[in-house]
Structure formats: structure tokens, C-alpha cells
Length: 378
Ligand code: AMP
Image 1 (tube, rainbow, N blue to C red):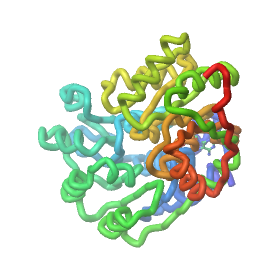
Image 2 (cartoon, protein in one colour):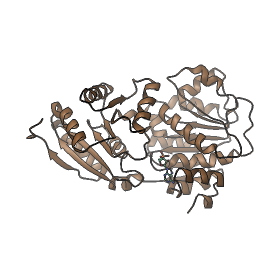
Image 3 (tube, protein in one colour):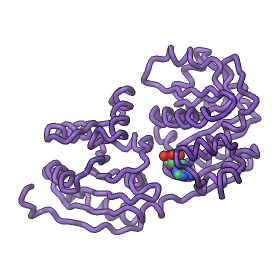
Image 4 (spheres, helix red, strand yellow):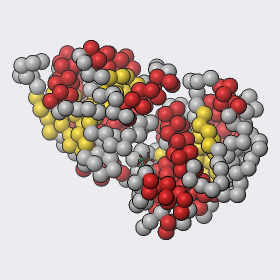
């Protein structure tokens, strides 16, 4: 299967080839033709499955001949849970759109930054990528209208619900025209997602892509039994021994993320923390530095983990366990992507032992454990 055989325009195929993307992923094989045929789609897929391109490509194609809008009527609306994802998805649209012979204006809007430039930037927009809260604010300010939306995309809908955006989402749905195409993407299929599906989708093509199994097989996992007080020294030792140049470290609170990051920094390991209490500018800067390899470690909380799209991440460290096994799988799924092997390291304290067993059971993988009790440096 090639992108051309799916009907993707040659200019877009070339733009993909320039990014070394030549073979469609399974979700793309199914979603691209369905979206081009104007069908509603329910995609159960995680970051790393190629879901973004699976809707970006056909949506760009469908705008051919419709892009001369001189108004504030959005044609394609993509709703995402976080600022990071908004920027990321906006970039994918813009990068691919550049190759087309017709011009398409894509704008990403999100909270945490001044609203005025975003209001001005919405004139003549075709594709809008937005977080729910800021979208509603912009609508209240009459900076855009949704009455001509032809396609609605909800990306990472499960996360949107987890972040408590249900009411905002309903307000947005009420402003949309009743005849439209709907695409719903979610990493999981929970009862809540099914309830949205019932409201939103009309006889959808359902695409389930279980990236999990394949990904986990590429990940070497090691667990370390360690006392809370020894986690810092153990982390530094592992970073040094494994010569880690790019490690994503997870904590369960913003406070702990700051603490771990500060401590690493004091010990000569470049590090920044990225979480909801940091400003948008600061988060983006940290992510950029990390992606470019200018930052050895990034310490993150789960909230942001989905927005972190890095092609190949060699190391993930669970400094603290997440509550949900799904989050654990999601965290370690940052490594071992795109057929590159990765390594996931997990710290387990006495109090964590039972919970880590639950996680392993859910993941259907048993992790080799190392006991650090007698390690002299600790
Ligand atoms: P996503 O699941 O949309 O977050 O995409 C994950 C990553 O896979 C992105 O970095 C894409 O550039 C990359 N990607 C998407 N489709 C393909 C493909 N068909 N072949 C190789 N890489 C891809």
C-alpha cells in the first residue's frame, strides 16, 4: 500500500517523502479513504499510531477549491485537549499544506497566552486547531463563527474528558451546523467516549489500532526497588552509567517534577521541568530544547505526556508510579516507537510494590527487578 494508492495528492506524497514517510501506517490506510468519502470516523488510536496524518492529509485535500475565505467562518475545526497538541497538530497541517498549489490557512489557538493576536489571526482561516476553553472565549468575542464548519475533529477525546472539558465540548457541539462530518479519535474506548460517539457520530467507520502490544515488545523494561530517599542518587547513577543523552522522567506531582529537575541541574545534568504550572512559553521552550537534544533530561507529569511527540526517545524513567496502568503504558510508549527499541526504567518503593504488580498484570508483561538495597553509593 502506498499513499498514492490511497488517493493522496502527489504534492502531499512528495512532502511526506521529504519527511521520510513513505509507507502508510494501518490507521492511515483505513482512515484516509473513509474521510475522503465523507464518512464519520471513530479512531481508537494512541499517539505514535500516525493518527494525526490520517486526518490531516484528507482534510487538506478536501479543501481544494474552497480556500479563498475572506471572513471568520471556519471550515475545518480540530479540537484538542492541550496547548502542546494544538501547536503540534497546527504544525503538521502547515508543513504539509505548504506543498499544495492552493493556499490553506491553518491557525492554532489555545489558552495561557494573550487572546488579542489570536483574534486578529483568525481572519480568513480555513482550518482551526483549538483547545475548548479558548475556542469558546474567541467565539464569545465574535472572533470566529462555527456555522459553516464542514468537518469536526475531536483529537484525544478521552483526555479532553479527563481534563474536565465535557461541558465546553457540549457548548461547542451546540454551535455547529447539524450536517457535518465528524471524526473522533481517542486512545481508549470508555463508556464516556461511547456516549459522545452516540451524540456525535453518524454510522461511523470504526478503526481500532492497537499500537500497544507492538510497542511494548520494543521496550526493554527494568524495575529498581529503591527507598524514597535514594531515588535521586540512583537516578543520577543510571543517567551516567547508561550515558543517557535524552531521558524523559515522570513524576506524579508538579512539585516533585520541579524538585527532581532542580536536583539534576545542581548535579551537572541539564534538566527542565514541564508541567501545568509552567507558562506556555516556558513549556514550549523546554520541549524544543529537549527535542533538539540540547537538554539531557525533561521531567514531566502525566498531564503533558501525551503532547510530547518525539520520534525516537531512548529512555523513559518512572521516578514515581502513575496511579493508572494506562498512564504507565502511555508513558513508556514514548520509547520504542517507529520500530526503534527503547528502555523504560521504573523506581519501585516498598509502598509501590503492590501497585506495580497491578500495573504489570494490566500490561501483561513482567518486569525484571533489581534490588538496590546493598548498593554502596546510595
Ligand atoms: P501521531 O500518532 O500522529 O502522533 O504520529 C506519530 C509520529 O509518527 C509522528 O512523528 C509522525 O511524523 C510519524 N508518522 C506518521 N505517519 C507515519 C508513517 N506512515 N510512516 C512513518 N512515520 C509516520
